[in-house]
Length: 497
Image (cartoon, rainbow, N blue to C red):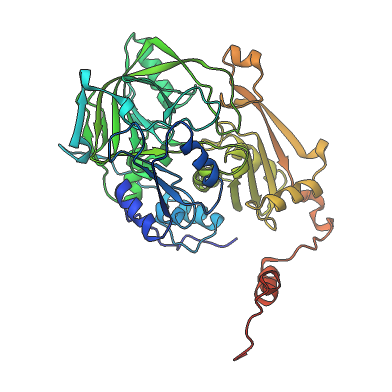
């Protein structure tokens, strides 16, 4: 596989508005006026979010919202994917993932944030009785959602009360009333750990929820950062400069000075509200409405003409969430495997069809007996992959692990089910898993099994394995160059040849 470590990386924007201007220069922004939150925005999401090259959509003049309040949807698609990650535009999705790994993960930099006194986020402030989250657009994204969800493109910042480190995590938020929204935290996630520590002390959890801002901060809130590491400081390292943060007037927690909308308040152990159901990333409404923790909003900060970010999970195939997680998580898992000492890892790809969580392909150049099993088990249980992994397929280096057809072909022709599949029991699962049995869900046993499939040629007789008649990358390239015109009907000119 090609080495993309020399691909230049530079994140040119500093906030959501600069990002939006850059996306507009690429010709990938569409504006919709007058769409309602009850139905129109969900229909628009269904129309564009699944498409790999779908546009970014900005909703304006939203009924029920003040003039100038906006909602942005579908950040990560088309040419703007590379721009968002600060990478060259010409890269394929696999090349983009490996370039991301080489640029940001191979020699990671953490640059602590800088606290400043003021920023655009303080242009407008609601406190006490003036707090009204109902002014902001909160769509009903799916037909059977239990209510409007203002927090799908959001991340929440909390602080560990014992160890003092900060976390930014993506936890969905349903609007309950003018002064409260839900905070859906899954067990085991860092924000949940912080919450349980506060509750054990008989205290409320201080929390700030960022509803619109820098795409990178949101993306990092949804992938696995190391325990004790603040995701915003990772983004600072990517940019090569500290992120400028301000402190909330109620909790003192920091948040980006150039964020769009921020809610600040407390999550208390004695208040729960019915939330959901919600069409989640697995493509199912998982469970009925259930009681969930609530953020009691004490302050709202927002910029003039604020922009809420919406990232609705569509499920049933690739969507925006799967696209950005595939690029980032694939890179993280590959780096995790390499850091564990596994040699000759060629590719890792978290397939979008499984929400970039359920199915991982790993290609290796086999060096010793058990190499494939070693790589597969680490790929299934390392820090970047353990949550909700279900199938890991390890293949030889002649297979493009990011190509689902090739991955399945290797699995179908190079495995014997009894000999080639191993199982890991009691692995960390997600509440969004529709296959989690009701009896396990009832006792909050969020575990399942994982299959590790060795789809490599059997090591001990690999030299005797039938030769594949699939083309080498060079032959495939020549075929496209010489006869690709047969697919388009546009025969190349022979003038000058």
